[in-house]
Image 1: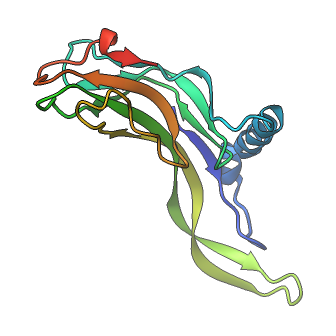
Image 2 (image 1 turned 45 degrees about the horizontal axis):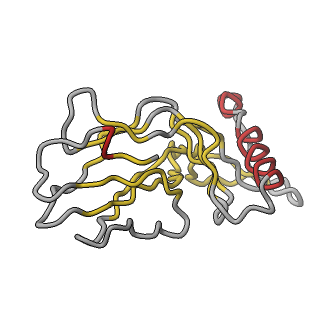
Length: 182
């Protein structure tokens, strides 16, 4: 489930349908609450879930379980309301490597509509095309480790590290739960 919220511009004349997406304040308040709770921590936080796991039929892809993560550097929440995947893992090379799986919040404006704006001084109404909603979803990426290094690469700033995935030399068929360190 995505978190969907309304968008308003200064002096925009709102429509009743805009209020169907009233959870924007709840989202903003949750971000503020998490920031205050974990202000002393320099680390990102997995509030619950977001476990990396093998797929129902093992392959070179993995899934993430339902969950919530908080990125300290951006102050944003990454949320997955359903099983997220598949996330592709590149086949193994000549030596074993350890990959880093990470996520971040992706915000996408959508639902462009023509809206009226009232000038508070003159009372004149003008019209503009504006986006009326924002979709919050997670984006995942895998950073391939260095073959034979024995350590996973650092995660990217602005992303939340979810797991380390060990890819054996020559592996090209499946990633199993035993290969994943959450």
